[in-house]
Image (cartoon, rainbow over all chains, first blue to last red; front, side, top):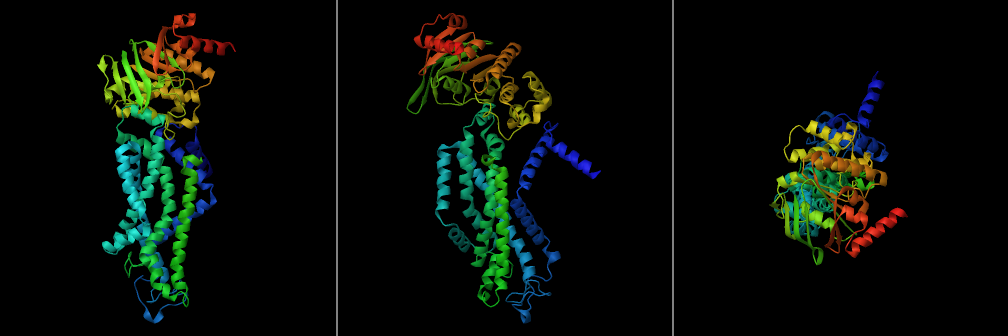
Amino acid sequence: MSATTGQSWRDWLLTDTPASRRQAAWGERYRLWCSFRSNGLAMIGLVVALAMVVLSLSAPLLASYDPGTQELANRLARPSAAHWLGTDELGRDVWSRILYGGRVTLGMVVAVVALVAPLGLAIGCIAGYFGGFADRALMRVTDVFLAFPRLILALAFVAAIKPGITSAIFAIVLTAWPPYARLARAETMTIRNTDFIAAVRLTGASPARIILRHVVPLCLGSLVVRVTLDMSSIILTAAALGFLGMGAQPPSPEWGAMIATARRFILEQWWVPTIPGIAIFVASLAFNLLGDGLRDVLDPKQR
Amino acid sequence: MIKIENLHVHFGAVHAVRGVSFNVPAGASFGIVGESGSGKSTVLRALSGLNDDWTGSMRIKGTQLAPRRGKDFFRRVQMVFQDPYGSLHPRQTVDRALSEPLEVHGMDQHERRILQALSEVALPPSVRFRYPHQLSGGQRQRVAIARALMAEPEVLLLDEPTSALDVSVQAEVLNLLADLQERRGLTYLLVSHNLAVVAHLCPMVGVMQGGEMVETVSREDLRAGRTVHPHTTELRRLSTELEEA
């Protein structure tokens, strides 16, 4: 019975003659999902990334200790049944700190992406669509931000305000948006002069409507790809800021900061700094694989 | 309906259109022929408002056109583009393409109007939720024509509407355009490099060369070979030679 309903769902989604707008839209999504699903590495990336998000969200359920509880008699312990991934230099349970640290680190990534993508998209599309003075002004501002090395600008920004998670997020946003603006502008410039945009202009639609409803959807594909590929470098920047003491402040567990405080022990108690390093590595790799897969599916030039 | 006097268009240093004037009465068709680069499409783009860098005088129904057009202009004048592969948004269904003019102009009864437009251009209702890449070239051009008709315009500007299609489909689209004109009383301004296409649809033909309109001739005179300007004679000779070959 369930097999037949599954079959009819597929038929409903894949039909050549959808009966409603909703069916046509879901059919298109289902086709994208099918072509994504056939990419093994991308599916691994998706599963791992989702697993990490779920694990950090359910940290209170899975953590065996409070991430801040110190147990100085048992510091730098090897992984054991009591402490699955050992303890750090203050005797805190590393497994619990990794789980809670995922909330901070991945939360920073999500916050940065949620701010950067719309900002870059808006600036790039406006510059690309209107051209002329708006384009020159916005692109020179972009160039100014691109001129500084990313981490140094972020460092200077955080140091000027106040070290902490919020200012780290804004610092990363400030340094991460220019490539998005460039990308969106380049896409918009190729779309701007096509006949289908001319046709929309001839319906009398306003520039805002044209950009939002006709230009942005076409830029979105390459932007999503860029975002997922960038997530790993955002994780690394967040970790680097944490490592340098400019991101999350102790005792808040953040992967980069965990490596920073434990780096003294890398020769004798190597697992203490290595485990958050592995977490960063796995998260970056998962997002990279996901991004590659999304590029194959979403990038119109590769279809 | 359309009255153009002394139209000049510049692209930087290039003087693309040099003082073109012509008249199209309401409900009539006027064709412009010429070689590539003769400025015929430029006239159309200036008239449609896509190119606002022109001088001279253009009137539609007696109203002088400004470089920037208002919404009422776009309800009155619509355009069909040359390449049906490029003139439909690749990520939008036929339904989206057709409902866009309705939304922009705040028109009602979307459902009824869309179905009616599809039947008017002889497309089955099943194409409504297809994407352009699922349609053939002829079907796409029909969708483009349907979209141009959504806002119920009085003037249709046709920029080589058949040149991207193969010959049998060309005839279908031309017949469709002729039918629509009869049914709706549309005024056509057709641009083409193909004399046969222009002569099929338009009783009056303007010939352009190097940005100037060198001759305006009636279809009958053109068929009979009563042409004045050597360029018209040349175009006609090439076209008949091509047909015979």
